Length: 615
Image (cartoon, rainbow, N blue to C red; front, side):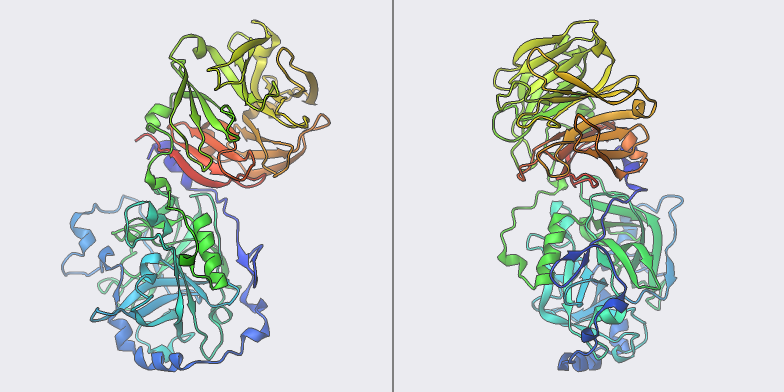
């Protein structure tokens, strides 16, 4: 992972909180006090009584963590498995803090068939759900609870040395057929499916009621970023350093685990037992609410040492699993395609060191397929085309021009259907001020060329150009231009031989001199397109539906962001199957290239790595 991009995941969170009503996701978390009175009176089945008798204080204290390979923190004894080979924590790595825990975070205990002892099946946290009975944990924890496992219970805010019936909130038996994992997940994998290391477990009520009413709950929160400031909580079983099995917490920034859809954090003390523990944003102790954006798990079960820990980032697959559990629907009965996580390898050929030489990129339907292809002009003047496959991937590369001196002189470019042929054209502004239109690129190489403006023209001051359907009814024939003095203009009805009619949207100004990158697409989901701007500060914003009368409403995707100052190229296409031009492609300064699928006017879409960063 390159040093520039490694800083990308340490500050700003873009995740959107997701809370749940009885039938759908609501707009945010709510305190437990809002649970209706009907949830307070629940019949208590015989399971609770039986499990209270089974889970004595001694039996729980003797349980062995499922993730015991993380080490047990045995002082003065044999080194744990992770201590034999792994390096020590980097200088400055913080220490976790032992504390009394949170009401909605606790420990799973269960006895696994064929195993001679009871396992602490990791940590779990209560999340909001329609049934108010859902607990989030890691997939590699839940696998052992399903099927042959027995005596499976969840113990909120577990207290070492107390029997089950003496625990602060009692115990909640796991429901029969109440364990939900993605059927594609494989335990403790080092492959892409480790992105799916999460599970939802439904539990029975106890005498106090349903678990969410009793303890409060976190909001399960899918997102598209790896950067958060979180509180990570777990229950390490480390006799040498934590003999009373107290909860541990660490307030830390997260970064990306390169090549995976996973976060990582550095904090000492996260020994075996912490898997499944929540990574929480904005925790409110008084209301017992917060946003859970990850759980300890992922690559090799979330890590095999006690100071570097991983967590999946919740994308559409996690959301689908949540919805299955919320509806009581078997995820195995649904059709799920083979998992194509970012660790499956790059979707575009070549490493980041190669893609640092991608000097210009543009998106458009250059093949007449109804979906976008990625056109690249390289620093040596070569021009190539990567046809999209319609599912966020790409077909084999096609060369449009061999390396040559001529195409080294491109200053900026964009793609649109200026000739109205249902196949995209390329508009190029050259270093000397010439403007040329290359019609129907793809079918005829770089197409037939029309000179739009001569060498030495005023267009040498066009800093960025972005084609879109802002005013046009049918084809992408409008051209947004940001001039070097900060003026912003919209050219409508652009075609072969004509740059159409200019409409001034902004007078020359200093603010728009700082508009570093422009692209356009259907971020609002409408037929008319929107403008996206990356500012010199790293801020990213959109303008909804610019017309000849004005720029439209500004919406911020995120504010100033140091990482986004390293975004070098930006284009938008129709690379997936929703029929909208809203898939954002970004090439970063270290060559990493990423796709943000289904980007919206105020939110980046789901991120997919197309090219890994250079080492």
